[in-house]
Image 1: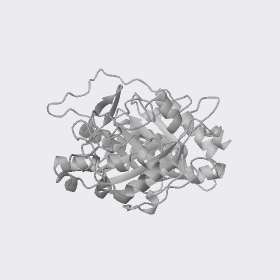
Image 2: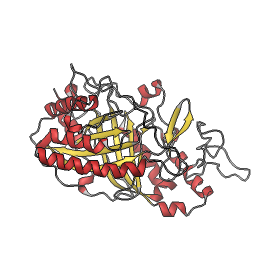
Image 3: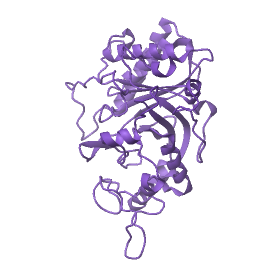
Image 4: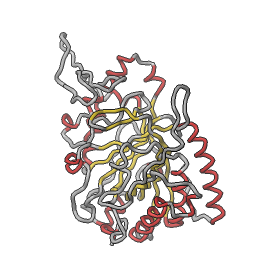
Amino acid sequence: MHRAVRHPSRRAFLEVTGAMVAAGLITGCASDSARPGQAGPSAAATPMPVPVTGRHQAGITVPQPAQRNLLAVVADLGATVAAGPLLAELGRTIGALVAGDDRRLLGLPPGDLTVTVGVGPRLVRAAGASLPGATDLPRFSRERIAPRARGGDLLLQICAGDALLPPVVAAALLDQAGVRVRERWRQSARRGANVPIGNGLTAPRNPLGFIDGIVGPHTAAEQRRDLWLSGPPSVAGGTLAVLRRMELDLPRFAALSVAEQEAVFGRRRAGGAPLSGGTVGSVPDLGAKTPDGRYLVPVDAHARRANPTVVGTGLMLRRSYSIDEPAPGLLFISFQNDLRTFTATLTHMDTSDALLRFTTTTASATFLILPGFDRRHPLGSRLFD
């Protein structure tokens, strides 16, 4: 998982991708095959392609809902590697992969493939110390992170409905980068079934059984305010990402009664409604109390401790995924235009959020997600030219 990436020969590339396809077949059977009493995906259903070019990169707000499968690859650039030419080259390769024009797809149809690229604080600081994304994440409690699983220069977030695609696409992109990059860590993950949360939106359940991602910048106005960077021009249209891989103590959480589990989250497990009442889309009434004076949403409930109004921050967009390896848990991914949205929220949670008692963070990084690109403006050109 933490081995350095060497420039592979073409034969080695085919061997690696062949092994990845075999692994993907196993993963696909586990995550996407029909279960008893459950209809499988239609063989005739063809996912719509997702546009590569535009003001924003794909894989953040589009597609909606997000694809089922994700592979995040975090890597470092060599000390003498120029970021601009490498990113432009990766952008062209992404375009070819999404169009199905790269032979390294090994004949797989790209479908709804998206690749989202971010650069870490070291590279951002080299472009401008005051730019958004130049700040490293601080350390928090409940972390058990190996040095190579903290930080990084380059993020490749690869998402697809077909579980076979992400490892093959990652192999193609790393083959293109060659010795210019060295892999730090990677994480395969998947999303659960989507649940309607109102206004035509859906969100998946997390491994603890609760709906994940109910609150977020869902409207265009909210996204302009809290998601997308408006400036300076070199980063306008981008955003800031936080990745946190967390192990979850599933047996201990499962041992709780449903009422105790709901008290941890501050929401109903079945439908997602706040414990203060209403529907899944209702704003929690944090002042509501029982006749004997107890808060309906407990003081240490996640819905209270992570509430943006209580913390005093903007909204974060979450595209979190479930993981099986290296241990059962969650790959938390949030997008926001101010890193403080995440750091202040987690700092506030650190003091008494009941949910954190069941988590241990084993990888952590933040990245500036580059603005969208096209033929006239290659990936990363506004920042590194």
